[in-house]
Image 1 (cartoon, one colour):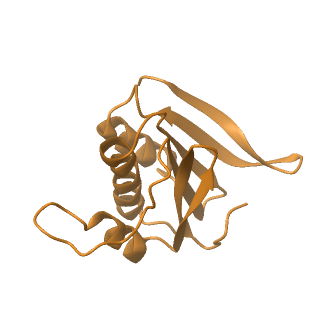
Image 2 (spheres, rainbow, N blue to C red):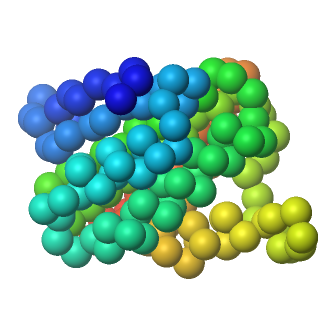
Length: 139
């Protein structure tokens, strides 16, 4: 599946879950969706297809609308919390826009399906993230 790593997620000194890192220059959006399904196969409290849709929207936005480098992290902590982070090399804001014939529905779906979502700007780019499940606000 292209470039992908599976590493423990850490909070302080304890292992708290699993992180799958995907290079969006090397994997397809279909491979991202398959990785989400595998990661959440035994999750409870998270709608797997909702998580797939959210990940697909954020990864597709990075691929279609932003510049390289592009990457995606899928983070599962416990059985009831999931976070996706899509990185890109653009500082253009991620924003909900009025849908039209060219699109504009992606972040509306993310806003409806995710428990919370946001954007962190850094260096020459940004990370658009979304969480599904019981807790919200990151680690």
